[in-house]
Length: 291
Image 1 (cartoon, helix red, strand yellow):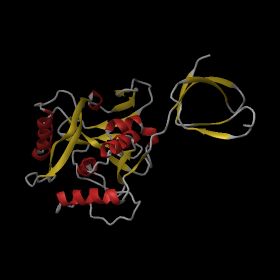
Image 2 (spheres, helix red, strand yellow):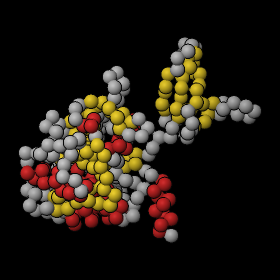
Image 3 (cartoon, one colour):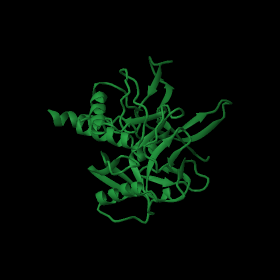
Image 4 (cartoon, one colour):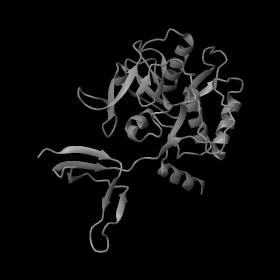
């Protein structure tokens, strides 16, 4: 009998054995793959390969004491630039809205500067890897903490300036393949009339080639990295610029897929969110470092 592979985040089942009848258990973490027979609604038995994995905790950055301090530092840095500042009045627990590239990069930078390591802004890899678990995916847009740079020069000199600043930070002069770059943070740049900010290297600046950004396609997580789907494989749609030029946003566009077409890095909407993934190991390491 041919096995079908099934991925789920948790499995509800009934315990068996003495004293356990009809007790319902929510199985949270199982690390090993196993084979299991399941009956469908008609009672026919099917043989499945079942992988059970813990669902990651992904949420929006929500206003609290820590985010108030992040916003204070961010707004002081970008005072007078309403496209980057966020001067809204939030109540505790409300999500920070109006995501765009400099806000996502800046919030991530200041969280780390303040020692808040356990809630990093989602990277592009995180979005692909944990796509089924992303909170309120249908009704929100979200930028990542990464930027895409392409092989061709951009026609807008201000966008091209950002591309060259990224190359300078990486210690390279160009690229033949699109790159996904993590570890940049924005600084005000009054000479950049389009965007009002420049990009410099933060701690842990890294990049990796992303050939899947050369054409519209579907992508998936293969357990180690993002790969382009083969014909007929299920995956996440990704939309890219035909110009293959400049610096571009890496964002999730609702539940329609991933978008790398936008070269205007300041656009935002009330549906925009800055999302994070909770990393308890980083929290433990952070607490240990503070002791």
